[in-house]
Image 1 (cartoon, helix red, strand yellow):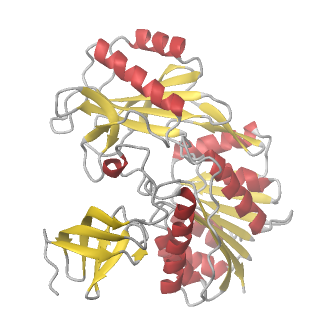
Image 2: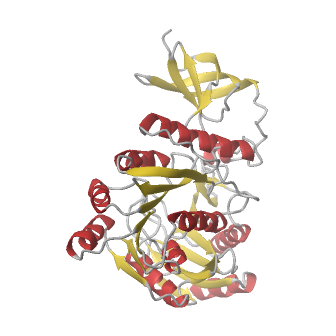
Image 3: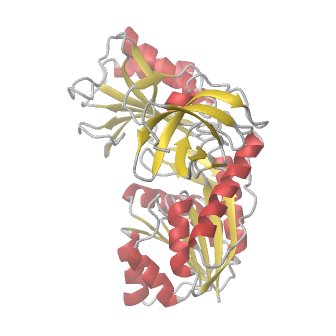
Length: 452
């Protein structure tokens, strides 16, 4: 049967894909359909046909899954932040486990069983960082919200069920100030206008709040009044930062930060440790689950007092500091200089003196430590960006043969690709998904490898 665009079909959903989408087959031709659950029968419209597969959208659910739930958010389908909001939470954990298992089965020679996904007790309002674009809607109204999936149209959000409640109230308060004072907002098409984004960071355990206003200029009209009004309404705001971004780019924040109030950072607590968070530094957006993740990673690493540990892509030093009390020495590597500055201060803050943090590209710094300085780690902790490891780093890891590797990944596809390169000389002892992003397609995975 020839599958045609704009034609309707009735199909059975036989599986869910890696991003939570439903999978159907028509005469062995694969169709991907968002917002469907395995076991459902649906009427679909074909929206795109490629050589070996097609995309459809749901017109009608003929037979519902027992796991389907009425979404509590009116905009989730357009927003793209919560792809699985229509699915019972426990079922989403199973779907993520199955998605990782499917990748493992397709890619690795050794068929490792993926453990159950570690879920969250209360999977709501968990994000400690919010980035709200500011713009004009189709009716000429000033709005903040989120970009519609795969577009730059701003969807106003009344209430988001994954963002921190305080950050939502604060962002709306700043928007009202912008409206009342006729402050211009940025227009992507013309490059004109001032306010681009309102960014908030919240210390989940300390309740400290950072407000960042990203502008296409140097100053905000009535800055002093804004500071005064914010502090009166939100006493937990510990610092207000003006971030300068004049570039015509999709990158939200520029490199220049000016403190309007406070010292430019907030603190949060993970485990037994305090961490300093600055505007440009990376900190896990779900600290409650991140703490569980780090505890699992550190425990499974089995670090002893004689061990040298490398923490690749260390960010602000969170997991390095978790590991330091068990190790002889921890070397943390991170390309973002501001994060390394924070990491050094975080070590001081927690009275830890057996860490060394180095700013630079992991590929080059790892090569230098191993081949020039002859520092050989006993344990390697890896937490790379979505693209995973570069080939040079993989080659160096294979060359030095550390006894243990703990690989934390936010992208199971690149993780499994890298594991395939390591499994000849390493046994994969554990693959465990941890749900850092409830109701979204995203999945964090902690993998433990032991030298054969």
